[in-house]
Length: 144
Image (cartoon, rainbow, N blue to C red):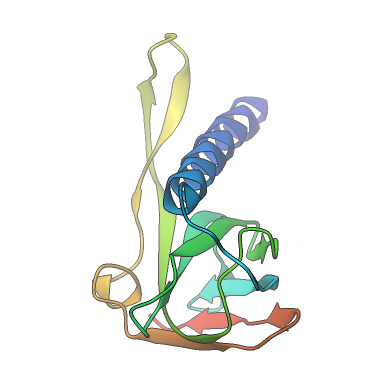
């Protein structure tokens, strides 16, 4: 049990680093005023998504992608890196455990994960959100 928690913590740290890197790269060289704080809950088939990412992509063609880490069924995006107000396409990814374990580059056993959501929630997402000025609470209850 302790090993599973350690594996989950490693995966969460990896996802956090990946999201932070994406946010930094998306924001590099871009002046962004008026970012909006977002938070909410994300579930799939009524169960909270334990580890994943959420990305808000402006549909207007201007602005930059932004998003954050989903952890224990919830996400928060600070206004410093949040999207601007307006309509957004939303992509949600879930790192679902496969039940298998592999060894990482340090020889530690870690839980193998793979995308757990259908493409209609990420690569070919049909999800949308209207981001308003100020703090937003936007929940996503994804159906199987």
